[in-house]
Image (cartoon, rainbow, N blue to C red; front, side, top):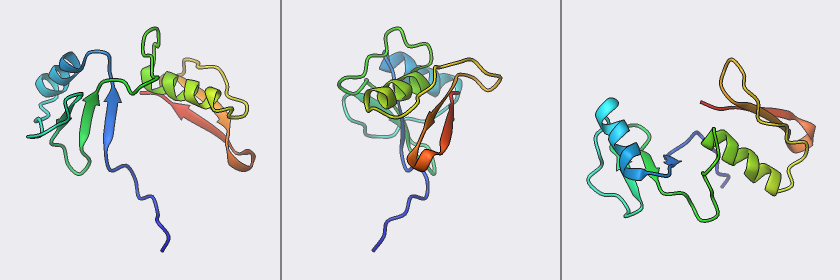
Length: 112
């Protein structure tokens, strides 16, 4: 049997201050908290995809990163030896960088 990816089934943002981030999403966007969550995270009862804010994973340093999602992903690609990872740049769509993926495809990542 072959597994296929249909899309995300859980989204979590790694943040420095979990209570402040959770309050933002709860108070400003009205996201309801799920009845249970691990100690290091706040999970929201969103549908169809659960959403959470959580402490950074081991080895993730968010200090000094101006665009955490894009910046951290870029640093992971560089550390993994991914070919031709370009610099993080500003664009009309937010932070952006490109890299060379499988079989030479040029892939571009846009931040939020």
